[in-house]
Image (cartoon, rainbow, N blue to C red; front, side, top):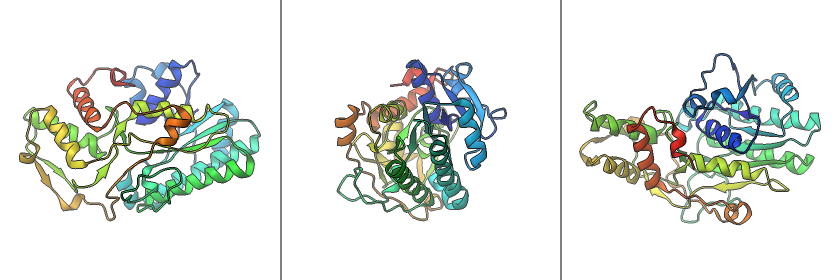
Length: 323
């Protein structure tokens, strides 16, 4: 069962699990109204069953899990935008925190050996200095989104320790793909640069280009999600490339792939700055490499190039760029 199957990660995870021979059930608050565009773009919509389930409603969550009787649940639902969380702090907290505890309580009350993957985020760490963040790093979130993710992280740990539930949080750093919507900075940059190259747009407005992130390739990251639930005793893992670069570097790679000097087309807009910003994201992926045997193949320059290629080849199956 994949909660939030309509998003980037849910769609790629569904494709990965289907390749492994799983029967996949996706959930949405209104499965009949959701278009599941990601599943359609990957050409797998007809192979996925869907169920209506509201994670913030315990009765709905309990009923859906009882009906579907899954072996594994992947919680990828909830409000996903950091910038939107400043405008919607209550919705962000409820969708992430209440949704997570409802899943945990349903599993506990059913008494079945269901394993649960929880989507964490590097936003839980806040601004990271020179020392890369690991599973033991202190959490200092600086956004409503990061605070909600940190809370759900501790919920998972508590239910795992107190009730023996096989639950794990994947602390994923930034990961991108052709399925990213334009409200995310990376796709905004790729889409804007491609429109500029096509003569459809003059300039691209961006905020702080000095922020540093670890950008990876989403189709690879869902492989790590699945691997976390296959070990004997699930635990938490930092998932990233271990390669940090600035947003300016990402912009440069995207425009370079199109043969354009970004400095002539990018305009800084102070209104696009966040109220509080995590200026640097660094990751220590040693634990994932040693325990899961997982290492990222693609780094930021690869991600930027593949996203541009996908945008230029719109209509092609995004599985072409899968792990």
